[in-house]
Length: 405
Image 1 (cartoon, rainbow, N blue to C red):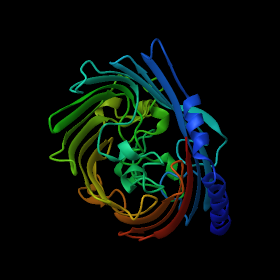
Image 2: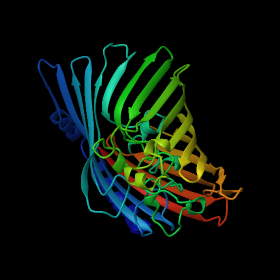
Image 3: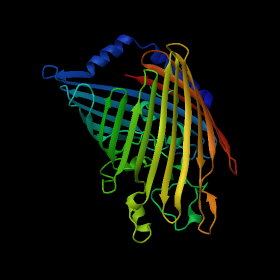
Image 4: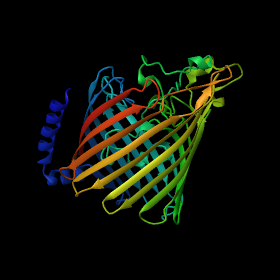
């Protein structure tokens, strides 16, 4: 779909949604909220309807799963939030779309999140959660949904694929390359989106500090097919943690860490003799910052990641972004994001080294307008440049319309 028809489609949708009565959504919210047992149990269903359009230059950027140079991606996301008494809370997220990442596939229904949380004390000093949910590392996963994210796409470190290949093993260093003719979706980023792994999480806050530690079934770089406990068990778990510090209402600073195997079970027969899946891990150390002042919001994250690659050695990468959002009014905002990934050399098996991937940077610019409390539209432009040979560059344009209920 070309940009002009796509934009026209979104504007027509906006006009229709923008004229929707707020009273209708109030009635819908009441209809989707139920309570019982003397109001001790309350449940609410809410959701997002997204229609996205992408136009880009080949090769396909990020985790877009298509062989074409354009893509239209509709999505319905439903949330269920249930409060049971003062101490129990359950939530779930289900999606109807064509794959977790935008893709040319048939529609599917999928449960992305489901968890039960126990909070024994009202001051929030301790929470225990079991289920499938976003990783606790960093700060982007807390605002990755379309209504909260000022951009349409994720930061580069959450969607740009590296040479890491989680279901095969290179026989030697020379095979550890990202083939330009192979689909991007076969490879792994540093972190795959919000990383909805399954497991158990303990979290809480004490004064100006907050903490979270978790045991998950899959690494931060694991693909969506690995997130379910029925697909990948806990024989070789991943451990994630974050410590945050909030000196005042403007600042939120955090340090995170992660360690766990990144290879899928089908790679096990290909490993060197005497090696198992748990012997080849992804290690991550990350720092994150959030700052808010009046109409300005700033976020930044730096991830240092190491992959223990069989028959190759340690593959290190540093990925970071700096993001700013400014609200010009209660409805209109603009955002700018700088992303960069830098790769360290790996041994070539002959006494030398070689670059295991190409250094690159990307700049993203977006504008958004909220027509009502329930409708929003965003437009985004991105430009990516590799800084090592062959120095490929590419632009992308995206539009997204969101209806929230």
